[in-house]
Length: 262
Image (tube, rainbow, N blue to C red; front, side, top):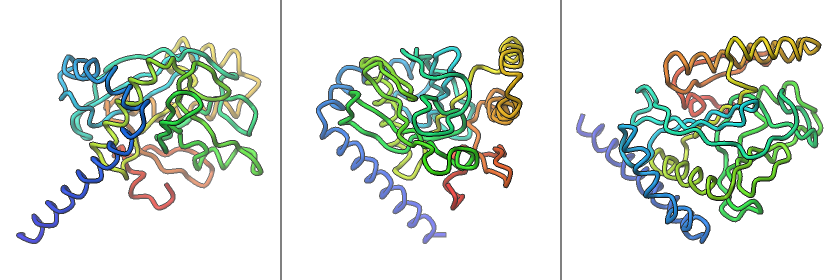
């Protein structure tokens, strides 16, 4: 038992050291320092007013293309119900509803992803790379060039990305960086992208306007499983992918960490 507690303490200490290294490296960049200085106080109040600790711990992003919105949900524990913290406006859309399938199609991906990389020196102010293409995308996308440079970024321009104004991106970037630092380098901050909120009204719109694309309807019904899971449990879904390229929803959120294919 003594050895267990020593090992746990060592892991905790190492994780906190890595967290500080991550933040220190980020703060070497002037843009990140500006993001901290301009948004940190607002973020602390935002989380405090939501009944959470002031430091973002566990967060979940949900993007809705039809509504042009990016939702922030958060919790102080990965196993407790998440609370909706804020809804941000996506400042410019690109392409049509439906998943991305090849380089240059201008489509914003749809599916279940995570933040793969932070770029404080982006050509678009600040940016965070979305983990497109994932296993489902590779099953159906162009085999030679599915595309891969998909970001949440500033500068309010888009060719298949999720663009924000610079001031909003500063807030989003600093929130996500703080959560990443808290959870550790191996944690995967989830961001799921949907064509819309799957309400009855929106489903009627999708089935009317995309009836000629039955494969797309089937795909939307599949990712709706993740949407429903979160709406029911208020905990971000994990997933695995079957041989047919379907998402299979599982718990917990960072199931990806225990799956060698993720």
